[in-house]
Amino acid sequence: MSPCQNCHAGCCRSFAVSITGADIIRIERELKLNFWDFVCRWEDREGLITRGQAPQFYFDDEPEVPFAICLMHSQSQFFPQSTKCRFLMEGAPDRDFPLGEARCGIYGSRPSACRIFPTRLSSSGQIAEIYDIPSHGRHEQLPIYELCPRPWIPADLDPVQTVEDLVVARFEQLFFQQLARVWNKSPQSWASFPDFIRFVYEKRLIRKTADELEAEIPATIPFFRAA
Image (cartoon, rainbow, N blue to C red; front, side, top):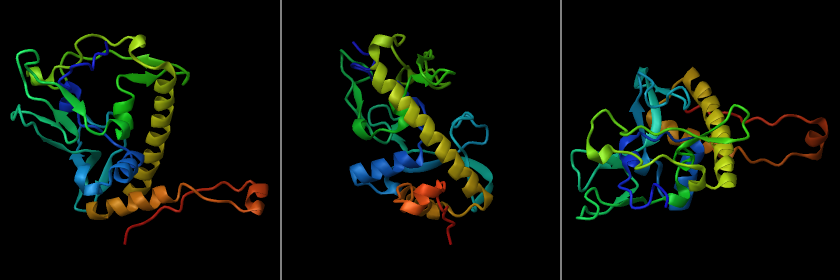
């Protein structure tokens, strides 16, 4: 049985989930949601959210503050002293499950960070490694922030899908880091950020002319600068 079976989803309550532009576009398109329905920026001065992996963005309203782009959190219905991912669907606590059962409400469209948990690519880039999970996801030792009930093992995961998800996640994270470098050269408003994201990702699919193909001219994205 998977560690996620009958789980109260401590991971979805504990962590700020960093998302990429690709995650944003996919959720908007597949769930017919607006950027402002699920995306937030979280102050990340200490880098505790991005952890040197996800990029930090700056905005002209607070030019000295680095932000992580994340899924929104909302207050838990059954544990009001805690928060949860905006998409987590909670079940009421009962005698068998005192912390309740919970599940992802957008599982098929979930962000890459969720898809690859709890794995990472090996240094060779060819093998998925399962990393150890701490007992709690936050410093507050509340039961609701308890994480996986047992260590993950290879049999819990699909070896093909897991590596594919990791490779895609790495590519999208590197691309998002490139976007951050461009954006941060001249930070614009938070209100203009969704248009920047949509413009850039719409330009990731092009059709080259025969001359361009023959000349092997590398295709690059004409990065958008908000007005």
